[in-house]
Every structure is written in structure tokens, then in C-alpha cells.
Length: 471
Image (cartoon, rainbow, N blue to C red; front, side):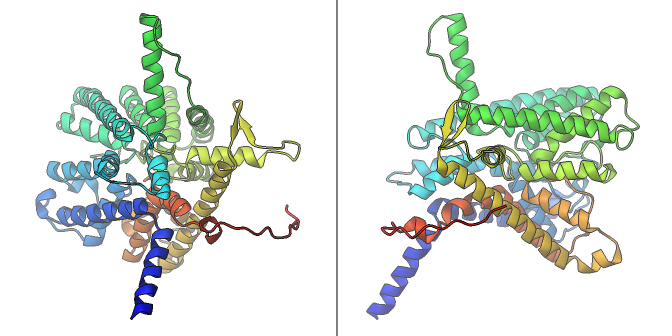
């Protein structure tokens, strides 16, 4: 009896070591909302035709909204205002709701976060989790809601000028969806009918980019603006230095907006953009580089792009947005650190130095770990989908390229599709549900909450060293 109790205690201790409380609570949060949301979306009152929808499709749509992805096997036009309102609530719960959930969790009396749970909270939300974390999260939620409200007002006014009947609701729905990088639009054709509306698309792009900057960067920018204004207007206040993290985010954001835009413009000038005017071609190329990162809105169907442009889109979807933001994917700072470390030569001894700052070895090791696990995760999901859709592939109904695009879109929580989502079988949809959750939370939580035994046990022995031929 005593041996059984001790064995049970050891198993429980092993489980707690392997999975942090923070990551377990994230999983419970997502599962609870997915179950409730999918059950509600089954109700006929949320559909225009009052017809029932397959549960796997409502579950898929709920998880897609919760993971702010945008993939949807259902014609979005089937949902009435009540259905779209429920969908908007789920999107908000997957974005700001997750922040509010953790702020409440860490603010509970006598709540002590483990070291791993602190890392989960820090990587998802804010860097300063040790002090004033609740106040910081409150500020983030307030600022985010204000931005969404202002975005909704602008979009509603633009839609009103375009004679949209439900301009007010659609404006706020799009504002929430864009800021949360969800990619859900209230029309069946996404944003195709607005691909020449410059003011509308600029507002949408601003919301996507700002929502994908990350909460740490958002906090950094707001503090910089406030201190700068005080110094200019009143001549008081300390100078606020932009953090290294924010600088890297800005560099990567500009690069991932500028270079792909030029590539899309050149490659699609006489192809996907052939029927557009020159200003509209420029607008669509910039929008494509923005939406591919994690947003999922479409101005032009993904099936119309050339293979080279599709490859660029897959790279952008895999990279995703910035840490601590609404976005998913590998993350920009991860790719930046891996690239810098890769081009570091043997002459560059010591720490990796960026912008006159040294990067700790733990950060570069973690970046390499996240990148490798993401690549493996993508490979596993693509392979599973290829097996699941064997018949459709052999019949020529879909291609392996479509499968790869869909898998990367799900893992990167981008939500773009080449039109095969509704045609996938139930098993493939379940695989994509897992992929969307993994892209939103799993890559980080796996990297943080499943440490190797060598990390959990202090080692007192140094083994003999040997060199391995590399490259």
C-alpha cells in the first residue's frame, strides 16, 4: 500500500515537472471555450437559414476563432448577426480574453507562479511579470479596447459610404477581427469586393500590424510617446529608451512588410493583379505581405497567385507575428536570433551582440529550439494530412501544395486558404484543429514546459568532450 502511494506521488511529481501549471491552464481555458462555443454555434438561432451544421465544422470554426486563425469550413454568410456576434466574442476571448484570464489567475490571493509558469506568462503577454504585472495587463487591455473601438468607428464610417446596410456592426466586427489577427470577415468573399478601397484597407492593415506588434512593444511605444510628449510640452520627465526587443520587432516588421510587398508587386503585376489599377496593385501587394503574417483576410484569392508568390506567402505564414501578441507562428524575434547566430563566424567570440547589446546564450538556444520544433511540427502535420487525404490527392481533387499551404496557414494562425478547407474530411479537420492550437500556444509551451532531465537535475559531472564534423 505504501509503495503504491509513493509510486502515485512520484508520478504526480513527474507530471508537474513535465507540464507547468501555466500551460495546463491555457489548455483548460481553450478546451472549455471550444466546447461551449461549438455547442452554441450548433443552435439554429445563429444561422440565417436555421439549418443545422455538422458539429465538426462548428468545432473547427470555434477553434479557428479562438486561436485567431481564420480558417473556416462554413460559408461565413450563413451566420446571422447573432452568430457573428458570438463569433466575435470567441475571437475576443482568444485574444484579449486570454490576457484577462491570466491577469486574474496571477492576481489570485496566495497565488505563487512557478518558474516555468512565469516564463509562459512572460512569453505570451508582458516581459515584466515579476512586478506590477496586473496593472500592466490592465493597461494593455484598456489600450487594446480603445484601439478596437476607434478602428470600428473608422471602418463603420467607410462602410457607410460604400452603402453597406450593416455598416456599424460590420465595422466593429472587422476591427476586432483585424486587431486580434483573426481574419474573419462578415462576407462570403472575405474582402475581395473592397480590394480597391484604399482608406478601408489602410485601417485594416494598421489594426493587423498594431495587434501583431506584441504587448511588450505596445507598452514600450506608449511609454516612449508619453515621456516624449512630457519632454516636449513641459520639459520634464526622463528619457525612455526603446528596448532591444522592440528594436528587433520594428526591424523585422519593416523588413517583412517592405521586401515581400516588392516581390508580390513584381511577380503578380501581370497575373493576380492584372485587372487592377497601379495604385490598387501597390495596395494589394502591401496588404498581401501584411495579411500573410497571421491575419488571413483576402483581397485576391490565394489560388490566383503564382507558385513563387505562394512560396513567399508560406514563409511569411510560418514566421508569423511577434512574441506576446495576438499572432501565432514561429515569431519574428525567433527567426531574427537564429539568422544572426547562423551568420556568426568563428572569429565572433563570446555572446551574440545586436545593437550594442549582448544576447544571453539561453535566448539563442531557445530560439533555435523553437524553430526546430516548429519545423518538425509542420512536417508532422503535413505528413498526417497527406495520409488523411490520400484518396482526394490520388483523384486530383486537391494537390500536395494545397495541403502544405493549409497546414502552414493553420500552424501560423494565418487563416489563408487555397479553397480546400470545406472539402477536407473530418479526420483532416481534427488534425488542423490540433495544428491551430499548436500554432497559437503549443510551440512556446512545448519549448518551455517540457524540459529535458538534464535541465531538471543539477549535474556534478563533466563528461569528456569530443568534436563532431558539421556542415
